[in-house]
Length: 322
Length: 120
Image 1: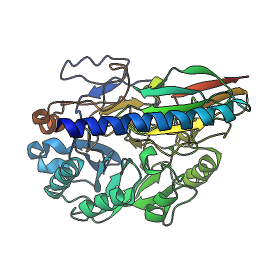
Image 2: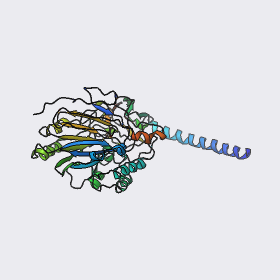
Image 3: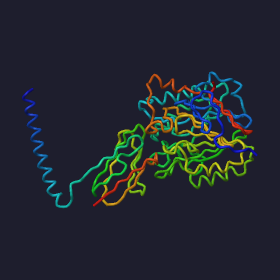
Image 4: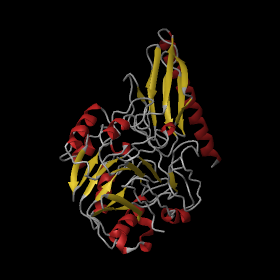
């Protein structure tokens, strides 16, 4: 039995202010996506921004896929007036992978204003990706005005409730959750009773050796509740995963990468393909960060090198290809 | 040129006079039944409503303006009113016809809350 330690120690190669009891933040402002390789049941995540430096051997595992997030198609403010171009850049990086990913995960905020043409534009760009299967979960920007009806019409085939589902790939169990609908005044992201009940049943009969990957838009851990960066009932969801040796949680929403290891669970947030957001509490609000145009593309590629080592058997390595 | 300016001025004066008469007539008939409509403004800046709480007399039309780069909504917690999503600089108005407290929030960013208090 593994010893559970809160906020497992994270190794700071860059002296970038990560403290030992806290979580690790790497300031890849608005990166492009994460290339995830599952090896021996452990998920390794690499920033797409620094693919060229990747050791090809690291790209090979039982299964690899790419997570992209927060495309915000339709956003046209100074923080990034051309979000289509930066999404295309992410796709170009996906297509340059020496080991083509099995599929893509998009962790929400596909569109900026839930407009049909915005979803169409993303679908069109993603068609040029080498991986043809794309698994989505909605962000709050995808369910505006209609409580997610359009989202379900487009992406909800075979899903439950307002769009949650699970699937298996090469022995890995993936669970896509929806935490952006029926939000209550003053609250955070919400999964809700029906979804939790479904999830409990969904994972109950799996062997404890099954690697689990849970993905949802809003972080399933309290990144910064003051800005709404957390999910009210995520603890309940995570309690169903206690028996599993390898659990990875992938989220978007906060437009920057963060990571935390807690017991058997490793949490990652992905960067946005569109625009950066400030570090928690370091701005008056979580609105888009404006950077000079000539710096935006460069900032998309800035990623610290981080090595994260859990102290249990199924520790996780997260590096950004340095 | 000077002549056309003069003509334009005359037309403008005439229009003001006409509209003045019209307004006067309207206010005369209206004043018998109700007070002149009042308005109030709430701005959305940096993921917050400002002012957070406002107190207005019955009959006030409150207008919210989103000045963020990110869309927001204005949704009554008790389902009295609900805006469509407001993109940058878009507005939503609602006229409060009954006294009471009307808490509301942004359904996209539910940490954003505010309240309209309507008095007699």
